[in-house]
Amino acid sequence: MKNVFEVIKDRRSTRAFKPEQIERADLEQILEAGSWAPSGKGFQGWHFCALHSAEKVGRLAAAIRGALQLPESYCFYGAPTLVIVSYLREHPHAWLDGAAAVQNMLLAAEGLGLGSCWINQLRVCCDDPAVRPLLTELGVPENHLVIACVALGQIAQPTAPKPRAEGVINIVE
Ligand SMILES: Cc1cc2nc3c(=O)[nH]c(=O)nc-3n(C[C@H](O)[C@H](O)[C@H](O)COP(=O)(O)O)c2cc1C
Image (cartoon, rainbow, N blue to C red; front, side):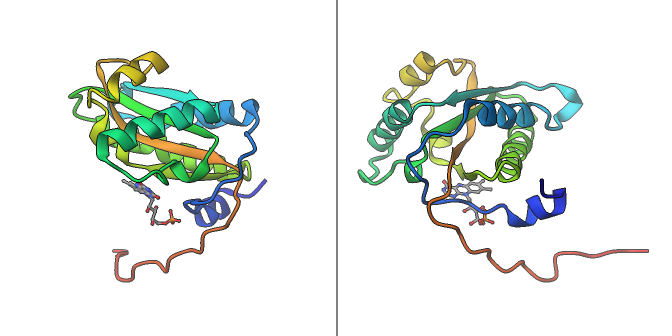
């Protein structure tokens, strides 16, 4: 197992997944990692709806394509599993807590040797009439907003790292 700094530095956004499904045990570990993220005042107002089915992931991609008029190629890069991270509407820490949970899951995936990608589009269309009924059917609470999705799968094509921005660290002693 890699150490935590290797996991942090090696994680990349995967944008080409293999079609093979990931193990349910790996998915469960990734979801558990999300649930162990910090949250403001320990509120934990999040929900993780995991689609461990390429068919259901495809149905969601089609609904998003319809709502946002995206091309047919929009399919979460072929990921066979997708986690929808949602949070209680209008909670002041929703975006911060949700983002922390997302990052925990991205890192957990890297630790398990899996690819992952933060996916944004459902955030802006989760209340679209073409999308919300499907989210309800899948088990996303109606009093929740979608924070992000996490695409998961085996890596078909590795992503090169981007150079780090300079001048962003200042140590004062
Ligand atoms: C708030 C946020 C939204 C993102 N949305 C998307 C997305 O919709 N699709 C995508 O391919 N990557 C998305 N990303 C991933 C970024 O593009 C990626 O982290 C960045 O290019 C750096 O690459 P790396 O993750 O490989 O280090 C998102 C990342 C963040 C933090």
